[in-house]
Image (cartoon, rainbow, N blue to C red; front, side, top):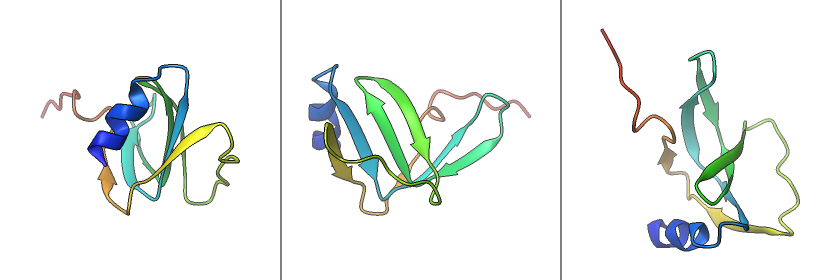
Length: 82
């Protein structure tokens, strides 16, 4: 799966749709958001999709099945202060 992600990012103009994930990220209000699919172009996240939202037509996207794995974009560089 990692090699597929790296390959997908090598073409900066092509969008990739990563589906079937158990994803978590923070929104602009620092609220935890859960998602099941993520669309990105190059190294930029374009959109996250909740389980209830319909996914776009796969034409024009590279689609990768995340196989139910957990995805934590944007949380890797986050700093938590207690």
